[in-house]
Length: 101
Image (cartoon, rainbow, N blue to C red):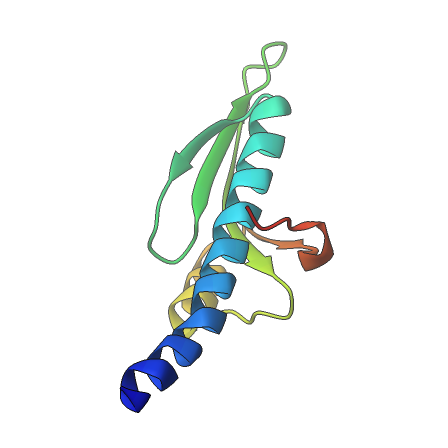
């Protein structure tokens, strides 16, 4: 019975961090959509690929977006992706604005 108790305690911070991360991703995705970007989930090396076309010039703007909450750091794969792509953007979301449901 004690083992089960300690496993539950260890999982609580992980669940909170997961929820903070998902809330941060939703917030950033909504902000980009409201700015007129088309948002696609990548899930490997970055969270989203966002694109927007300037209808006056016809130029297409594209970015890879990684969302971080709190003091989270980039993983080795994310650092490698950032080195390869000059259009890689790290969006940091303030965890104070996060509200747990």
